[in-house]
Structures are given as structure tokens and as C-alpha cells.
Image (cartoon, rainbow, N blue to C red; front, side):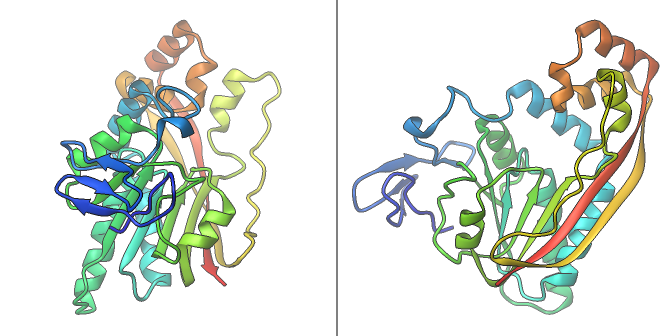
Length: 277
């Protein structure tokens, strides 16, 4: 991967196990293989992003396949709308679950089309804990710790980008995605986790409808993916609660009660396909 320096924006070159720019800014690769491109002066906290507890909970929950339908649908759309994909970016990749499954789907599609150039996937997240795990588990992908608001990539670097629940800056999306390149976004649909909202709020309200408009892009496709989530295993329920913002709104007693009783709630995902103008 060709990175740019997060301090001066000049190109970074890999020398042994360090990325360096012409202005002598240096970023060492961790033993797991990732590089931290989030300078301390650009951090909003000591350890930004999801903490180890949230990362572990999401990792264990996703590994059980509860959100696999979402991953499968995103991968289907990626292969359907992107005929030629060499460079792929997962924005807010977390522990790499969606990244790796997308990579495998694109790789298989490339083999079916006798494509000679291998697909390259880059994951970015602000959470060091998540990137550390992702890099260790998926060594065939590249990962970096960085901000989605100041991405350490050259202009027009990617044919396809994926953004699942991750905030980002529209100007950065315009900059790093090539002309005619694709962006897949996933956000909560109106009824997403509504059963949880009824537990927490006295007057729960649906999520706002996603707006299929991004400056500099044309929306080619918009759909909602809905299916029920039924949790009966107390450990799975605990992981689900701990990986979401609801963890901060529930007491330990409430969490324990929900875990013991089991949980059924709605999954409602808004999926959009955008093409760079």
C-alpha cells in the first residue's frame, strides 16, 4: 500500500519495518504487521475508538454469524456493481470481519473472471485494539490505525470503498475514491434494534431514514435489509449489549436480566451504492 504522511502529506516509503517520508517523519510497523498513522497530536483521547471490551464483544458476536446476512448482501452488491476492482478500502474496519469476507468474495469473483491482477484490501480504523487484532488474524490484508477524517492515502487511490456504520468526511471520500469508483455505505434503518430502544427509552423513536445523497457521488442503488435477531445464549446476548452504545445506558443488573431472559429485536440495515462523479 502507498501511504502518505499524516503530518506533512508527502509520500511514505517502506524501509525495513518503518514507513518514512522525505521530511524524516517515521512510523514503525507493529509486530502484527499494521502501522499506526495517527500522530499523538491528532488524537482526541489517549486511546481513541472502541476500547478492548467493545472490540472483543463485537469480534465474538460477529464470529457467531449473526450479521452474516448483511456481510453476504454487501459482498453481492460489491461484485455486482464493481466490474474491475484492484484497490479496496474498508473505512472503520474494526476487527476486520467485513473486510476479510469482502476480500474473499472479490478474490473469488476475480478468479471466476480469470482476472490476473489480485485484489488488494486496506482496512482503516481509529481503534488500535481493533487494528491489532485484525492485522494478526488476517495477514493477507493491510491495516493501519488512522482517522477517517484525515486518511493517509494518496488521491484517487481506491476503486471501491466500504463504510459500515463509520463516520467520515465527505471531502476525504471524494479525494481517495477514483472517478467512477464505488462506495458502499451501511447505516441503521428506521427500525434497527427498536426492541432495545423500548427497553431504554420511555418514548422510543425510529432512526431517521438514510438520505441517499452524497456530494460528488451518484446513488445507483438503495435498499433495506431486515431480519429478526433472536439471542438465547446469555454470552451472545452479553456480547451484543457490550458492542453497542446501549452498553452505556444499561446498568449491570439490566444487562444480566436481559442476558438471562434472552433477546429478540429487529435488524434493519440501509445499504447504498454510490458512484464517484
